[in-house]
Structure formats: structure tokens, C-alpha cells
Amino acid sequence: MHEVLIRFRFVDADRTIECALDERLSFRDNFRLLEKISDVNIRDAVIYDPEKKIFLSEDLPLEQFNICRFILLYIFNI
Image (tube, rainbow, N blue to C red; front, side, top):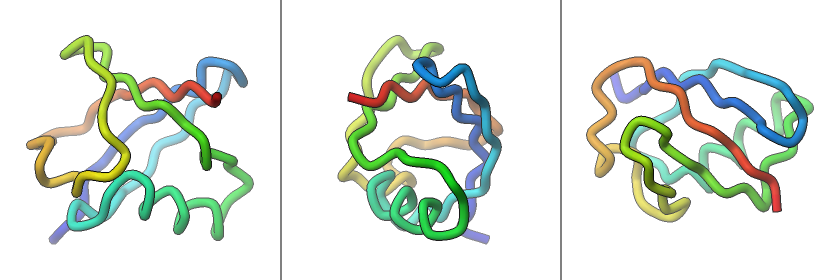
């Protein structure tokens, strides 16, 4: 399968969601799909990986990040 399991922690809204995203798509494309099926607004989000201590690009396919397990990412809406 081409899915990765991710827990997103929305820092400004004090909310957490868990979802399966398509690793062939970018965060931006996955977020567009997620917005269509939920009430989540993440159009202008900044994604932070607390384990690696880096901000992740929204335009790269997720498979380039080598996400091999369930991870937690922080979302900052700007």
C-alpha cells in the first residue's frame, strides 16, 4: 500500500487528528483531500517534525521523507 499513518498536532487549536495519507502525494495535495472529507483547515500550514527538529516541505512527495512508522508532526497555521 501507499499509505503512511500520521498524527497531526495542531498547536494553535489544541487539537490532534490521526490519518492515513498517500505517500505518493505531497502534504499540500493530501491536505486538499483531507479538507474535502473533514472540517480541518490546513491550507496555509507549516509542518514541523519534533523528532528531527526540522520544518518539512509541503511540496515534496511524502515518500521522500522516508516515513516508515506512525509519527507525530506539529501543524502551525499561519
